Image (cartoon, rainbow, N blue to C red):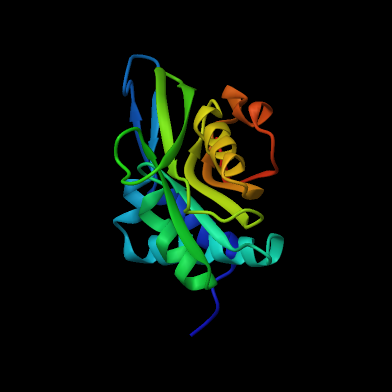
Length: 181
């Protein structure tokens, strides 16, 4: 069996990302990761691409952080494959125990993220992984939360980036996106 190149894997994943015009409102072209996640081959390729990138760029990572909710879909697989911890950042009121929180702006309003205070130990090296970088609000909030509990943000990694929204400019850490629209 021949080895599939990273470029071919990425092309295959990209071909499975759904596009929904005028969702959630008129004039928006919604790019949906679920199409790739329902295809077993695309899911494996996506995992491979993310793991390979993290191993090459951030080999010292100790914790993968996933954002509510699409970030949860593949981050546990990444952490397991990398042999590191995983912790979620959730929307307000979804985590038990003592939490830290930060309010952030979305494309369509505002929300609050929370992180369990003991989920990341001071000095632990973190990579934040999410499906999408749009305006940058959720990734910036995630970085703030990780730092509030003493973690070190090495990088944010996203599957898709909507470059026209300039979300990258708001972020205070290195960012890598697999696919740019």
